[in-house]
Amino acid sequence: MKKLVVLLLSIISIAAQGAEVFQGDAAAKLLIGNTIEADYRVAGEVGRNVFYEFYTEDGKIYGGERNMEQAGSYTHYIGSWKIDGGKLCTSVYGRPFSCSSYERIDENTFKRSSDKMVFSNVKIHKGKYRPNL
Image 1 (spheres, helix red, strand yellow):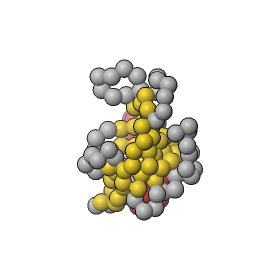
Image 2 (cartoon, rainbow, N blue to C red; image 1 turned 90 degrees about the horizontal axis):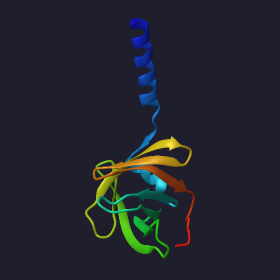
Image 3 (cartoon, rainbow, N blue to C red; image 1 turned 60 degrees about the vertical axis):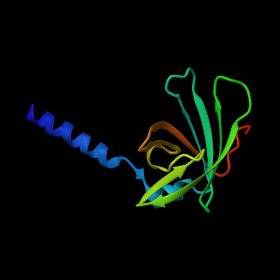
C-alpha cells in the first residue's frame, strides 16, 4: 500500500510539473499577431456566446462576439492589453483590466484563467482569423 501511495504521488507531481503555463511576456508572445477563440455561458442566460480577439503588438485587441444559437452578425469591439506586474492584463468594453494566464491543453488549445473567470477551451489561431466577422 505504501508503494502505491508513493507511486500515485509521483505521478501527480510529474503531471503538475508538466503543465505549460504562459504569463506576462510569455503570454503576450503567444498572442501577439494571433487570434483567440472561446465560448462561454453568461450566468442566468440560456445559450452560449462565442468571441474572437486579435492581439496587436501595439497593445490593441480587435474582437467580435455573438450568441452561438442565434443567426446574425458579430458585435465588434476594441480593447487593449498590457503587461502589469508580470501579468498579461486585458480590457474590453471599457471594463477594468483583468489579468490572465494561459495553460496549454494541447497544441493550440489553452485554459485561460483570470481573476474574474476561466475559459477552459480557448483556441489560438495563427494570424488574423476572421470567422465571418
